[in-house]
Image (cartoon, rainbow, N blue to C red; front, side):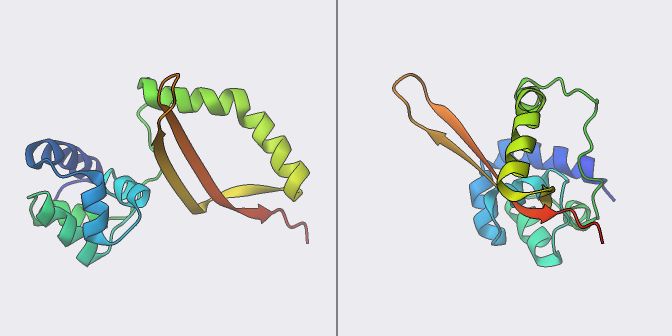
Length: 148
């Protein structure tokens, strides 16, 4: 059986081979684009039918479909500080703006955090005369600290 990491690599290769897009995969499994992408990259477990649908569309076998259903180890990067430029820039954003986001959450909502469990993510390309922009929306439920 494949590990989730091996299945994720098989997905990347199959996308090139088949020409299937993340959007097509999301539509086929009936889940949001960001969730489906994360699941097929090993960050969420898929249901049996979702896994079978994705594996078939990507022309992958039963081993991949089984791996898609495994419980993941979430947030597992290869290094503490990511080296991939796109991922590093997100890390940089958190380093620079994380304290600001924290202060604004506390001021606007109170003593609490944004959930990464009850969470939505969206990535959009937005045309701009000065060069296209990337808009990333992180939409997490507010969770107040409870000191009972």
